[in-house]
Length: 81
Image (tube, rainbow, N blue to C red; front, side):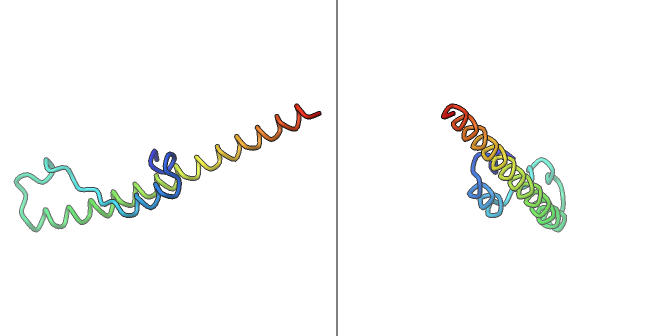
């Protein structure tokens, strides 16, 4: 969520591009077929989670920014009166 919150749409793009790899400790002593299947499944699952979190962070960041702007405009209008 941090990359989406801090990076906005750029963070979401990075989340779609970056492919996470499984920890090597999970693959020690496994057959090559298992490693290949596990790695593919891990990348798909992790990429899904990271893009969902990036979108969540982007939306939360945008909502907080909108609230901030509304409060600043309201305060500015109050001080003019």
